[in-house]
Image (cartoon, rainbow, N blue to C red; front, side):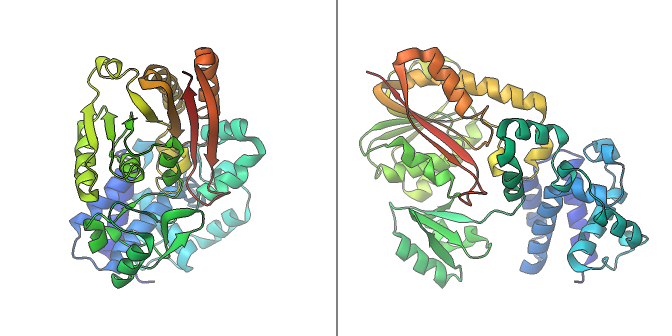
Length: 408
């Protein structure tokens, strides 16, 4: 496969932005493609897919390229020359030959062959930091290796049908007219899976608010809340509102949804998405102090608490998460989760229900947080049900959710 120099250079620059400057991969790729808007679909796809795959397998390609093992996450040691070497080795593995570029010359294939025949540690082969591999092994035991394998595979693209505006068959037909093929997902009546990755954001159906891009695992969180039309619901960590909008559709645009977040820009984006989706029951509120939460004590029939987490369940989509996460950050997240659960739960009315959710695979962020909360709360709260989704089992992203009821 011939690779044009400017396209290869874009991959190199993107990787330097991600690993040397610490920027998020999705934003780097978005910015890169926007800066080269005249590229054809082939070049755009090559840059996006190659960058993501090198991010996903960064540690294993660093090892295969014969670079110093301890340097793979040290920004000061990640040079343009070394990144070019990783790119060359990646292309050699994919195409069987090095790109015909000056920067890719001089690599000894005999050394690469010897490395391929050797057996490095599982953490190196599966491209994951040692500390994170050890943490997941401790928490997940024998279930970790197959889960790790699944997390290293690119994720499918799922759409959630906006039932306020259309039906699944009608949306499917409209997408076909835009040459976007998708299939229904068994057991999920409002979900479509794309047959191949496409830019659906330019489709007319998206601009008309007929669907949202949302993983099939994520789509199973809002229904767990059992929110009915006319209820008063609080989405306590709403972010940009993917689950908020789903709640609006499930409630048939009847009732009131209060969307809370500490970031104004996320709430601004939520309002734009709500307008496109035709959801007019959402009220956004910025959490600027503790009084915002206290004023809502005993106010909601339902509370969704989709807490900040490690994001380890969605690293198929965000592979740089495993490189950016640090042990101290994981400890901080666990403390934040426990704090939010304790402080935000009282917004639920007696007799009302709360769903605690994460996109993590770790029991310490999931079941153990709920168990600790229930032990502290005593008889005032009861666990009704739990859901745990894994990419190696259901084929969706990793999610956890527990529905709790506040006893009257």
